[in-house]
Image 1 (tube, rainbow, N blue to C red):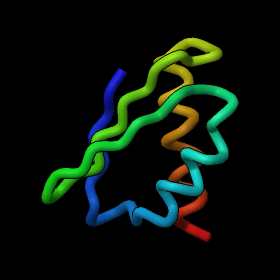
Image 2 (cartoon, rainbow, N blue to C red):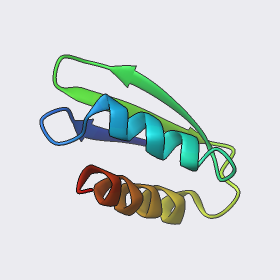
Image 3 (spheres, one colour):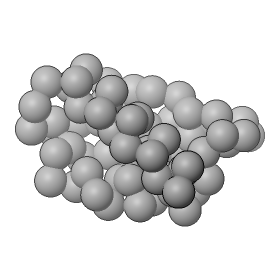
Image 4 (cartoon, helix red, strand yellow):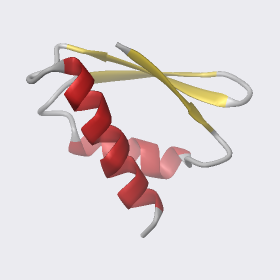
Amino acid sequence: MKINLTKEVYSIKSLARAISNYKDFAVISVLETVDYWILDFSDCKYDPALTVKEFENHLIEIENV
């Protein structure tokens, strides 16, 4: 499952922290374009759609701290 996250909102520092925090829940690889971080979720421990939604919530929380 892939998602695109805008670089205008999400920093690489927050993204790296969230990915590290989720290492037990999924394998997350990152590709970079000019405007987006493209995250690919695989080997999810739980439902992939739920994992992605929870990851996004966690990332938002990290970004707002």
